[in-house]
Length: 197
Image: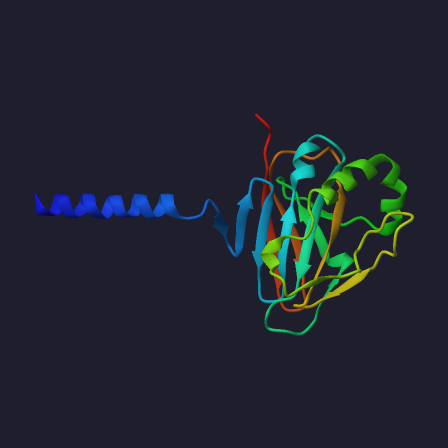
């Protein structure tokens, strides 16, 4: 009888501690902080990826994400090249970040979705007050700023903006991964696109 009581006490402790923890799911250095947002912390990069617009565009030709990128607390500068950013589709295809020329060409078609994605993704307060926004990004509106082929990030700034990928066959529900190849590591950031319902 004593063993059963002890077992019941252990089980109730596990259930209570599980219920009282955050609703965040953790997956290899990635925390899901909401249905539409994941946070990655790696040796060279901290990133938040918002996929709200991507989920609204299921079936469409464009995957639109918003990423916030910041260096780690180890200091130094991490340089991210456009060519090193891609997504992996649920069926395993690798799709590169589009070029600025491709972005300008598609802009008329996708500008309202890009603006909606960006407007719902202001830099998150989770970075604290010790950062400032940077003025560099990989894609720029045709009349606003200059696109960069590489962005240098550090611990004191958060660089952010849209990441757009053309998806032959349309954006499908399932497990996607944003992959950023860095000098000494790879940021592999999974996120799930779900059908509303």
